[in-house]
Length: 159
Image 1 (spheres, rainbow, N blue to C red):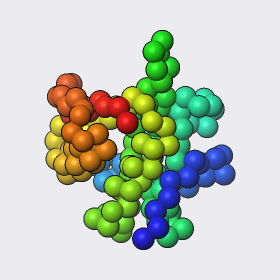
Image 2 (cartoon, helix red, strand yellow):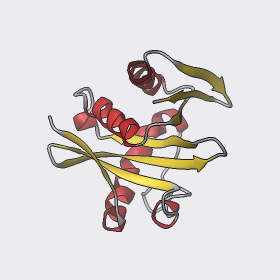
Image 3 (cartoon, rainbow, N blue to C red):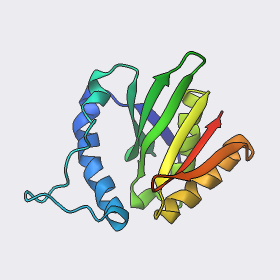
């Protein structure tokens, strides 16, 4: 299966907004989030920043065989010594899970901008933790920091 990660543009905003409903739905298992009265989940608080903040917030679409398969949201922070990337949100539609789409998409994102990376998972989201530990171990040959803090499992590493 051909997997690509493409930088999203303003024309992709509605697609990503729609995909976020599936993402939040999947997370209800871990967060207990309820629907709003209109039958939709609430908006991601900083969603609009991905379209107005230039390079600081970057949205991507994951494509599998040229079909939309998910998304990645990355935040970038500049420090005095380096640019740090935070993989803020990562989602693969159920149809494409366990087929290597997520693994290849993650590798694409890390290759997109080598440097310092960070990401986290909810402490009770064991499937996500297992996925990311496997990916990060492959990408870094096991050289990463892994800790629990404030109800999250957090990994930091360099690629």
